[in-house]
Amino acid sequence: MRNIILILIFGMVGCQSNVPKFDKNNAFEYLKDQCAMGPRNPGSDGYYACRKYIVAKLESYADNIVLQDFSYKEEVEGKTYNGQNIIGRFNPNADFQTIISAHWDTRPWADRDPEKINHRTPIMGANDGASGVAILLELARILARNQAPIGVNLVFFDAEDLGSPGLNETYCQGSSYFAKHLPIPKPDEAINLDMVGDKQLTLPIERYSYEFHPDLVRDLWDRAKDLGLDAFIRKIEYAIYDDHVPLYNIAGIPAIDIIDFKYPNSYTNFHHTLNDVVENCSAKSLDQVGRLMVDYIYNRKRESEK
Image (cartoon, rainbow, N blue to C red; front, side, top):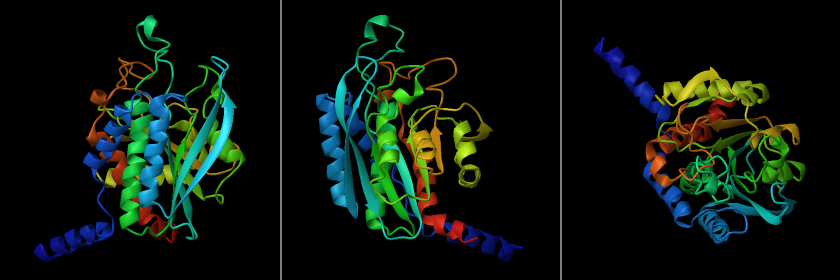
């Protein structure tokens, strides 16, 4: 019996032997770095500093970088902005290509803050903005050091969060432009990360995701269970209009969203308020999503060949 147990243990370890480690503390430093720049709403000093920061990181890590410029008019105040999607490409000649994305802009208005006087104040966006970017930057560092078996396109979408409540298509301007004018060859699938740093992280299945790419949803949530990532709940909940929707509806890319709907929980709201700050995020939460993304990248080819 002892020999059988040892074989099983070695077998389990072997499955993970080629998967690099996601450094949650590194990722959390990336989150804090962004917040140290202040709010990153379009046109602000923090916005330009963050754009420069992301590009500089990718210049150190990526095989190549694509900068996609576009302009758009936001509907709340009627202002026109110039935006930029930032794409870091790794193993671009691989047969299978995926996108892992997040938005890097933050909302200019804390319009869900309990204090009405704050409704025109920009949010910090530690969770809604910095958390997804932090994971992508840590993935970039890992990919630079460990050749992936698939092609990975890390896409930092701009102008996700300037929409008018209730008018879905006024959001996600960067991903909509990307989907209409693909700056890279059409990838096989996409995973979008949004609001993944909440200390009380809970990740049910977003409804559109299950409609757009059910096989990937099942694979990821099953794998999360295997890895002991307890934030992932195998339960379908709300449909969210996020950057994955234009990718699917416009470009036909099977796309899913990993998102915490309730920040921090069902009884309190920090989303689009001045409470979306570093103190309400955690490295442990980034680790849950980051570890799953690393496993996906380095095991995806093997899964697709089954």
